[in-house]
Length: 91
Image (cartoon, rainbow, N blue to C red; front, side, top):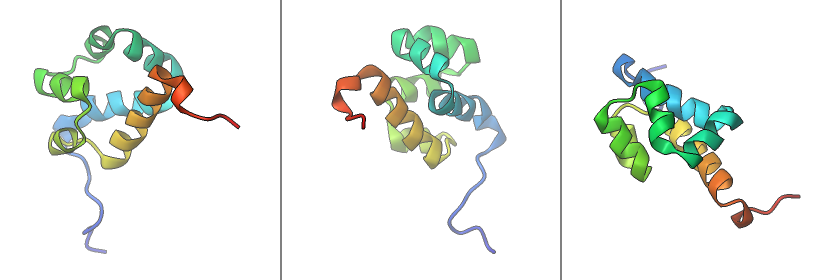
């Protein structure tokens, strides 16, 4: 398999991908992020570029910085669910 449809995120993007993973998977971290994004990003030591992209949650910019597209999608969904729970139907 040539890997045309999958890429391995670069090592330098580990902190960014870790943040996205925690947003997706760790309800406590997601709650802290929604309440105070700066403090949550400080916990992980994110650089200025990653912080800027996360503040705006700019998909293309996050991916250009090495974020995995799946994590960007899922983390964005979880942040929206946490910050706007009435926008989602629970059944």
